Length: 447
Ligand code: 5AD
Ligand code: SF4
Image 1 (spheres, rainbow, N blue to C red):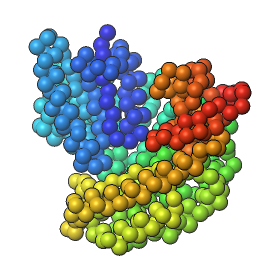
Image 2: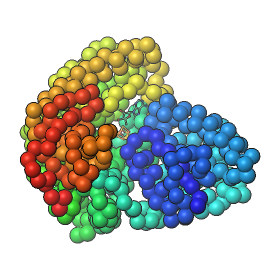
Image 3: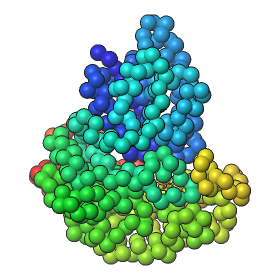
Image 4: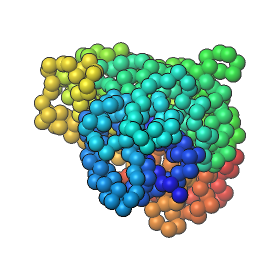
């Protein structure tokens, strides 16, 4: 039996793509292994968003080269594949920098992987096309995906924020047609999924062709999916503030299946920096938008991404970011030091912020965000919340799941509860999980 080892870096889209590559290799007779040393094919599904992420790939490729040599001495072939956004951004250069690599394949052409592997027997191959054929039409049907599954509804981005490689690595914004999404959703539900997270680089810009010939927005798509039997919960990520339309906000109010959680990156609280980032909205527009979202769904948990140390960022700009965080209040967040990326407009800027200043600002911001996160989690203690149970917990007799607000929750229960939503009284907040007990006797039906 041929074995494949697949490792993903970066965002949820890469996690999704990795499952689809696993499906594809499965059709070719490969079984997935978690042990890289026994793999005949090794796929690194890479991330190019910050320099650190991209550099990780090269150190991993160095280790793989040694492993490949050892396997060769034992008479075993190893094919090393670099997929994902580093593959797209660097293409053939990777072959020069990493001698052990056999295949370089971009995120829009990985459906050709079986053919590329065949060609790799005689030559090193690079495929970073944006092909005209639809990638998704050439992938095998989804296999069982667990209680919570990702569904790619949209790819690419037309926003061109000045710091971001995504419009170059993932290409222009493309929405998949509704009928194809419904077919994929059906399969996921048949395979046991109860929660779907709709993903896209700019998912709330979704504008797919509906079965009625009309263009469907993300709000309409969510409302339709919410009505399908078997689907208990819907989430979506990641969004741009300017694409947060009334219809989508209303879906949070009207559809109980649409979870009260919103990841809405703002990046900075300074109008000057937001303009330099080409975000096309100011800090008050973001505050007003959050007010509208909270008016529709008062208990919504908010999450965001922040970049500190964008070129030209002053202490006053940084203070404006801290003010915005204090005003809004986030349940969770991701924050990063600005990392100049080749080919992006901001990488050309001369007024770089010193590394030590970036570190100090990041620490200050993260301290505030962490206090807010802990505050949010502690506020859940004593409340009863619905938890979707997803997998066995850390200890025997425990089951782990998620609250509507995407908090990890552990309870004492049998594994037969997995896939159901149960009311849980939260008794304690740890640093990364909540702990609770079943409230009420019978679990809610899995539908
Ligand atoms: N430097 C630092 N962070 C970045 N992000 C995107 N590009 C960069 C960069 N060049 C962050 C943004 C984005 C998240 C996915 O990664 O905050 O929302
Ligand atoms: Fe990058 Fe997001 Fe801006 Fe698109 S909207 S360019 S993906 S940060």
